[in-house]
Image (cartoon, rainbow, N blue to C red; front, side, top):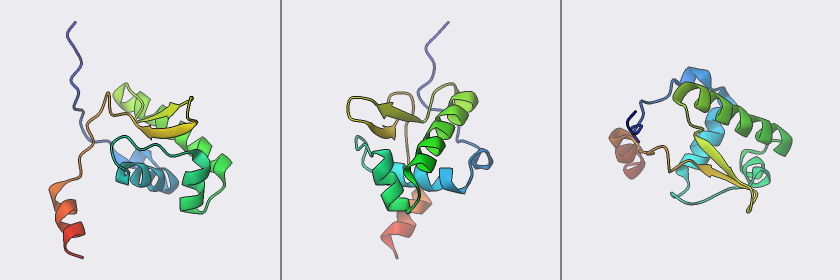
Length: 103
């Protein structure tokens, strides 16, 4: 057995619903080591924090089933969620960078 590659193929976005996608966009937009609490995510998205918590757990479950590792991780000492930067590389596609540079 060798080491698993760090880079994985893109996810099939069909697996995630609209709220999942909003949460992922918000967390992916944060800098590499920023963490957000479920209440803070709920505040940004103007949704109930319990609903946000359930969707965060759902994203973890789906991503672990699809790729073997959860895309999001929970940091219990800080009670916050963030990207799993150990098992994944997060990149913004080049065309998205150009779009954001030219509003």
